[in-house]
Every structure is written in C-alpha cells, then in structure tokens.
Image (cartoon, one colour):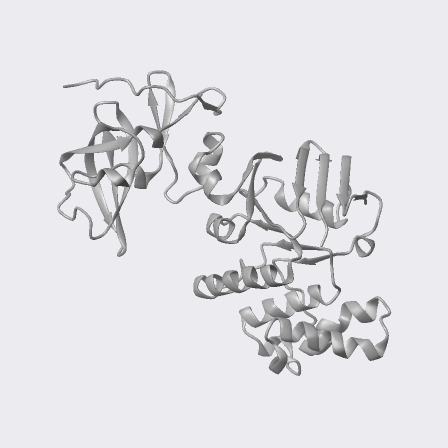
Length: 351
C-alpha cells in the first residue's frame, strides 16, 4: 500500500487544458473514485499517475516519493483498462504470468504467484482456457489477477466494468469492492457512472473541466453538493434547481414530501410547497412525478420521486399540497453556481 498525491498537476494539449492544477491525496488502502462526464480529465489524470502520460507541470508522489520522471514499471502500480487487453493466443495462466516473465521473475516462483492470484479471484478452474472461452466477468477477473500478481502499491482502474451488461456489472462491482477490502491496496478508479462511484468509493472526486469540483464521501457529496454541477451530475434524477428571487434553490427528487407523509421523513420544520402534477411515470418499484411549483416557480419543471406503494392516488392534471423540510433545501449563486448560506424560502406568490 502507498499514498498517492498530485500537487498542482496540469496537462496541456495543443489548444486544450485537460487537467488544470489538481491537488489530490489518496490515502493508504483507500478506494477513491474519479467521477465525471466524458472529457472532464479523469482518464488523463489517471494516465499521468500511471506514467503513461507526461505532465505539463506539477508533481506526482507515490509513497511519498516524487515519481515525475519514473517509467510506469518503476512506479509499483498496476492498471486495468476498459479493454482488458488479454492475449488471445495465451491461456489464462500464461496471461497472468506475462508481467512476471517480462520482469524476469524466477521461473520457479511464477507458477506459485499465478496460483495465488487465481485463487484470490476465484478463477483456478479457468487457468487452462483461452480468453475467447471466457465470459465478460471472467475476463475481468483475469485482468485483475494479472494486475495484482505484481504486488502493486497502487491499483489504477479505468472504467473496467463498462463493457459488461447491467446484471453482470452489478455483480462485478460487488466483487471488486470485496477484493479491494480484502487486499487493502490503494485504488484509484475512473468512471462516468455515478452508481459505480456511490457503490465503490470510500471517497469520490467529482471532476469537470479538468478540475476537481468536490471531494468527499459518497453520501456527503450527494447530500451537500458544492455547486450546481455536482448537484446536477450526481443523482438520477438529478437535484431539482429552481430559480427563486435571485437564487437557485435545490432539492433532491425524493425530498419533496407528498400529502400525509410523516414528519419523520425529514429534519427540521417543513414548509408548504404546492406541486402541480403534469405527468406520472411508473417505474415498477417507484414513480416519477413531473410538474411545477406554482407558488414559487410556475415555469420551472421539477421531478419528484415516490415509492410505488406510497400515495398511489396522485394523478396527473391536479395540484397537491406537498411539503419540504427546510434543512433539505440547498441554495446556489446563479452566477457562479457555488453553494451559498441557507436563507428563508420566500413566501408564496399566490394564495
């Protein structure tokens, strides 16, 4: 295990800044997720840490040592890409053994290391097979075993689950987290999938435009977004952002309380918020209600999320007396997008 630090790390391409002065610390044994949309700089940042991309300026430290000029093989890192890049003509055993052979490891030790890695990921019975004989999840395990056989200090993962179908991705995500906890290897994971980020990360670094917009524990980032980008990117559906008297008021779709909802579903006093329902979307386990807040922002569309079994009588085309706990309201500056201190919600526009 080792800490990973970036200090004012910057990467410029011709006419474009991909990473813009990122300061980041990944603690020993931590699973940190870089989350953001395509083009935000997360993969470029990962590749600089790996030594696959040179930085324009700034420093990279692994285990307290500056590694700016060290090649990838000297950084004691292992990396798994979106494409597992297994050698199709080699067996699983030989794929796992390949980095050890490339490093000139003693032949007598390689077999033991391969067996150890295979047992770690539960693929002992697959050692004789070729990659084409494996499922997507099995290929992923082989790629992870090949990376871990080197005993890296740091594990770097670039969207390794994106090629799996939804069901297998959920299973692989759970397995990956269990592997990381058991091994305790410092891990940096890149994804654009917020479900992966929330489920895997000890902490999440949300990136946009080459910068880290917010760093924190998953629930902290979800509950207390630092700006409108984080509020809108994290969450499905995302946080509602409603312009009210010169400020943006934000709240999560599940936080607007339907008529009759118990007070225990929120913290602090609840304020009335009439909700005009325009459309109801049934999703099986729940429902999404689309509409407006006629007393506060009649032209702004919002989304409300309800459990399917709760308030099933709510219909489109009607207005209902919902409520919102004041503590769940977040306020943002519409110019900068940054969070600002809470303030009382303005009175109703209509009776």
